[in-house]
Image 1 (tube, rainbow, N blue to C red):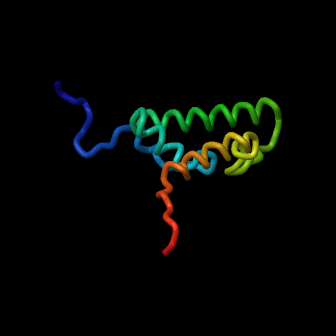
Image 2 (image 1 turned 45 degrees about the vertical axis):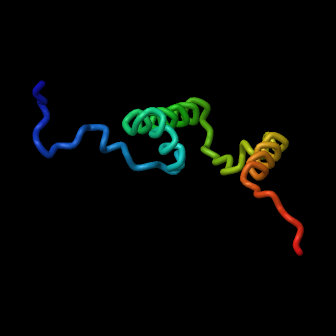
Length: 97
């Protein structure tokens, strides 16, 4: 099948690749690993548009909740999850001679 695109021309979605302050790069990387790079870019752009819509509709100013917002909401779940990870990676200790 023939492509209508000229040689050396980038696809239109390549202009949307840079991450924005509201989308940490790791979010884009996680989505890209599951769905592919182009879909990840569109998903992050959609999330930004939803945030912008609600800010404009409600007349509010954007306030970043912080990197540990969800950890602070569910502290016990985070403690259990991190404890399990630590136990999974820990090697059995032997008594010193």
